[in-house]
Structures are given as structure tokens and as C-alpha cells.
Length: 180
Image (cartoon, one colour):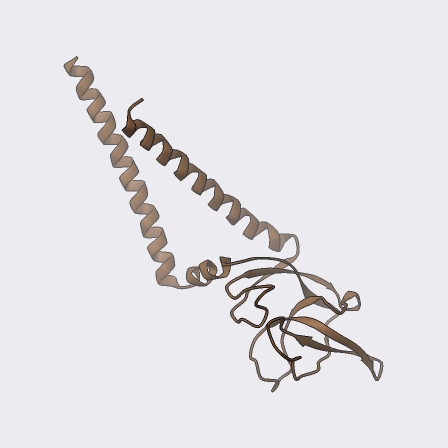
């Protein structure tokens, strides 16, 4: 078997493997929400060492009564507390005050406990089930319209190149057969 044939076969195997890996990842991204998991991209470093910046976490909705110290939750801090948007931190304290559960959290990489106390108003809360590092960077890039257009254009270009490559090979084989 010639070197070019081996390289061609290796490229085909690599391309098929990449395609099936992307297909599997896309399937997982669709199946996990159907199974009740919420996806969040970690944009800060407060959970560094445990969940790095750029990771994607999947959180499951659990009854608030099941939350315990040590659980990592994604929640919105109280208005005026400082950070805007959602925060993913570890529960370090749950206290009963006037018949209500009051929570304190801390990012694993932070030196001190978050300065706010809060209550969870809903009956369920997003608790981190698992995470994948670095995937958040790809999801963030994919959220930009220009990047999505470039990916679609690149895929279309690859299809065109593969089609013309096949036509070129078939035409070459037909010429060789007619000469022989």
C-alpha cells in the first residue's frame, strides 16, 4: 500500500472520528436538558481549583429541602449584593432564622465567605451535578453570529472540496481505464 493511500485512509478515519465525536457531543447537549439538567458556562474564577473558568456545568433541579452544606449551587445573589447575573458557589452555611432557611456561600478559590445572606424563594434549586472543563469557551464562541457563519461556511467548503476531490479521482480512474 502506497504512502498516499495510507495517508488518505488515516485522514478518512480522523474525519469520521471527529464527525462522530461532534455528533455525540451534540446529542448529549440536547439530551441533558430533556433529562432535567440546566447548562451554565462559568465565566469567573471564583470556583478555581474545583470548576475552572471556561467550564460548562450541568445542574439538576433538586428540592430546596435537600440542599446541604458542601453542595455547589447556581443562583442569583440578592439585589444590591454586588455581582450581577448567576453565581455558582458552594454552600458553607445553612441556618434557620425566623422559620426560614438562610444560606451563605463561598467560591472555592475565594479567601472569604460571600458577604451576603440569602433565602431561596423557589421550591427547587439548581445543584451542580457535573462539569466539563474548557467547553464553555467553545459555547461562548458559538454564541457569536459571525463565528457560527464561519463554521457553516467552512463545513460547506469542506463538502465542496471533498466532492471535487472525488470527481477528480473518478475522472482520473476513467481516463486510466480508457487508456488501458
